[in-house]
Amino acid sequence: MLLAFGGVWLGHVAEHYRVEGSAGLVHELSHSVHLYMLPLGALLVVLAALTGVGWVRMAAALTQRLERATEGLARAFRGARPRLYPTVPHTAPTVSSVGGRWLALALPLGLAQLVLYALQENLEHALSHEAMPLLGVFAGAHWAASFVQLSVASLVAAIVIACRSRVADLARRIDAVERLAHWLTRARVAVLAAPAAGRLRSFTPLERFGRHLLQRPPPLLRLSH
Image 1 (cartoon, one colour):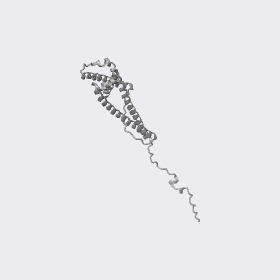
Image 2: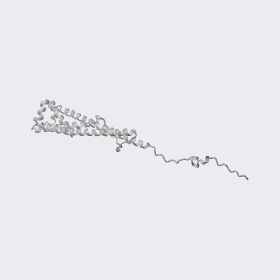
Image 3: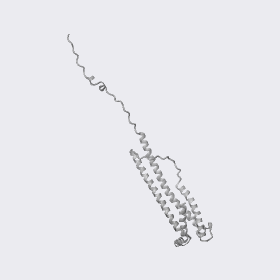
Image 4: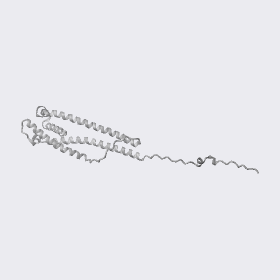
């Protein structure tokens, strides 16, 4: 919903700039029923900044985890004891194309902006004690308002999808590296030779019966009669 409100605000400002120019836009935002647009814009900027900071922190945390996973994979290749990560059940998600994800977000976002823009313009006319034009807000001097709103929605959707794709790419790389490190660890442990059982020592005949067997017997004594 924040995306829709932000898109409507941007589209509204862009449409008045297109029709009235910079001087007319400043007058509209400071001396008319559009005065509420200034604090609303400031609030949207703060919310967008907080959202951006949250995304940057999440991307930085994922990047650090990827570095740790890469280090663990290098240790596994060297045969050292790697840092094991908890195994997570692997579920192969259905990854749609970037264009499909963008279209799935841009269409409902654009429709929501058109509805909100029409409601906003009719409410402004009502507060000014003018007849509400209903769908006439998309006609006359503001004939391009719908195209402006749809263009803003397309741009916002592209930015959001780019950020989401970056996070998803980092998550996929982390998953692949961690799984490979875990597989190498398990494979290395499985092929380690079992400790050899103690073998019985075989003794040579010399060691078994003694060295006296190889000595000449003493001479026999002959008794004289």
